[in-house]
Amino acid sequence: MNRAQQNVRVARVDNVAEDIKRFELVSMNDEPLPIFSAGSHIIVTMREGEHVWRNPYSIMGATNDNRGYVISVQRSPESRGGSVYMHTKVEVGTKLEISEPVNLFALAHKARKHIFIAGGIGITPMLAMLDFCKKEKAACELHYAVRSDEAGAFCQELSEEADHGVHVYRSNRNERIPLADILNNQPLGTHLYVCGPQRMIDWALDVAKHEGWPVENTHFEHFSAPPPGKPFEIKVQSTGQTIEVGDHQSALEALEQAGVDAPYLCRGGACGQCVTRVVDCTTELLHNDHYLTNEEKKEGKQIAICVSRVNGGCLTLDL
Image 1 (tube, rainbow, N blue to C red):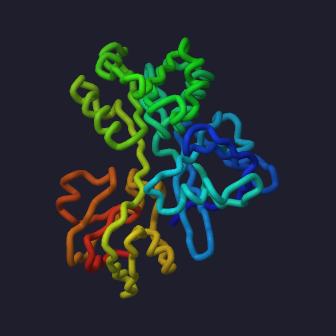
Image 2 (cartoon, helix red, strand yellow):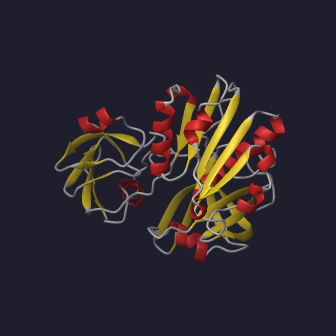
């Protein structure tokens, strides 16, 4: 139920900011990789002993260059292992396993203009989008918020694009994105794209709603890491199999470890591919996805198994 996998090797590793590394991935035989569109991501599989991590990373490079994929990884203090592995174990020559590109954050090609709002590592999909717009001579603006030049990836390169609608805002200089003013001065048919921390996404969408922007003209992407919680059990309805889920393990990861072919696509709570019917639950559902509506979450009939969990007890799933 999941996309084809391909082995790649790491051709280049660069430090681009505090706790951010850039990786270039190429095929094992140097053949072109599958083509991708701006906004696409891949799932990178990392293995160390019995540990397996599968993390989504946006492809940053030019969409007309599929000789390799370029991704950037931020080492997170709350990492469950994946970003730490990429920062400490992966070097030039390391072999990794990746999925085919998936695009859940595509450009609206009929838009009259594109407004990109990025925060921190959320800049990565915007770089491919910006490159595409420049090549296609599509009207666009990029507004990028960082803590400082040292903490923000690619600040120097982007600052040099100031004459081409690119703006960098540094919080250590008390600079803020004037989003309401930006949104108030756009032609009809403009689309807004947001990628960054969840609070930034919530803020941007609230501002857009307040300024009267149509929901269909606003787009966002945020890959949530599954938060830790109490251990619990999953019961697979079709087989009766009972699976233990650890406190730092997602339901999806536990199912995969037990050999269950569970559905997924983004592994970040955004796409809805992994949403599974809840047959029974002995305790509280803890929803951490961005796909189900508030009403659906309250009903408690579905769960996004890639990021959501339950507060202990047993969860029976329609699998």
